Image (cartoon, rainbow, N blue to C red):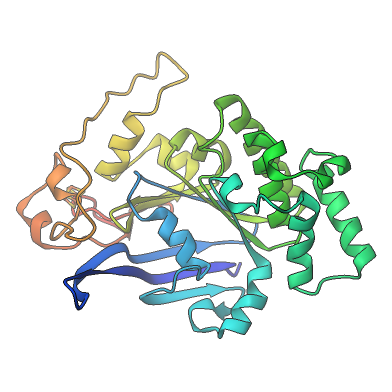
Length: 323
Ligand code: SF4
């Protein structure tokens, strides 16, 4: 099967400027060479600590941020090379759901105006067809037609996220990039929104790229999971493999902090040394080496690359020899 999304060597560096002349002093390497493949119908999670570059990855794929280098192939087109007009047309097929729906919804517009705007911008349907589409979508996400005449501030956090999802769905996209879509919500509401996304994925034949810092959330919804550390993917595997046999020392540490549902399945908590280093000055070699309990001399100088250690589990660690 051909991938729907294929990211190759994606980089996003932000210049650090200083002095009156705003001279470039260096770069924050937010995304530092990511390879990622997403197949039609999959939900792929990107997980990692705050500051690891996962949200920047999502925004750079969608070209809300211009990539510094790399290729983003979507449905046979390299998004990084499309003109502004071609990209505008392609965006209809890739929609984003944001963490804070309130910030991404214009407070002065009614929900009807917000949802109609997307269809109008892309010139989809007649006036009557557009109205019918948004009336259908608002019910699909669990709200009622009457809600269309209200403003974003009339809704709870969970309802606003339903509106954010409706806005993404109204264009019938092929891919949704959901950036921490439930992290601002109460736990009870989180599962409602996750279940809604799961149902919609089936009903609308969607593919999802799901960005989250929360491994339990990722476990609930994703088929495959990519673990990011300091702008790079350090491990990628299907969900069952990753949660049963985490192989990169960073993944092992992240998973050891997730509470276990089964009290007999005890996992020893691995406490990482130090803080996440600055992406403006990443450590040499394996960027995880200052915090890794297994680090060797080789780790300080040689950059490990993702290798298949079996069954499609890709890990970047010198200690794990691939097939
Ligand atoms: Fe640890 Fe070395 Fe593996 Fe990096 S390459 S995760 S430092 S053992």
